[in-house]
Image (tube, rainbow, N blue to C red; front, side, top):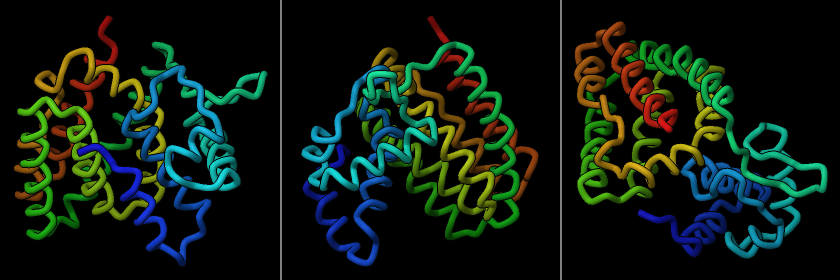
Length: 223
C-alpha cells in the first residue's frame, strides 16, 4: 500500500531517540529504493522537506549522504537528480547482484527457522495479492521485504549493505519496468526459493535467487 506521509511523521516522532537526520535519511533512501522518484527527476530540499514533513537541515544532510552513496547524482549546477542508468550501469549492477544476493540466500539457508519460513510465506502471499490486483506500489514494497528478510537472516553485514546499495540504485528503473509491463509480468521465483530454504538446500536456494534476478534483468534490459 502507498506510504502515507502522516504515518511516516508519526513513526518519526515516535522514534525520539533516533536523530531526525537519520530517520529522514532512511525515509528518503526507502523512497528511492521503491521507485517513488523517476530516473532523471530533480529533487529539491524544500520540496522534499514539505513532502515528508521534515526540516530542511536533515533533508540537506540526507541528500548529501545519498549523493555520496551514488543513490542520487549532483550536477554541475548543484541540481540533485535521480540517476538515469545506462545499459552499462545496469549490466554492472546486475553483475554484482548476481554475485551477492545468491550468496546471501545460501548463507541464510544455514540460519533458517520455521518462524522465518512462516514469515516469508506470509509476505509472499501478500506479494501474490499485489500481483493479482496490479498494485505496483504494494508489489515493490513487499518484494523488498521478502528479499531483505532473507538477507537479514544471512547475518552478513557487508553483503547485506552491498545488496541494499544495489537495490537503491536500481529501484527507480525497476519501477518504470513495472509501469511498462504491469505486475503480471514481474519475476517471481519465490516458490522455488521458499522450498529450497525450507529443506535447507543451500545450492538450490542460491540458484532460485539467481533465477529470480535473471528474470528481473531481462525485463529491465528489454527495449
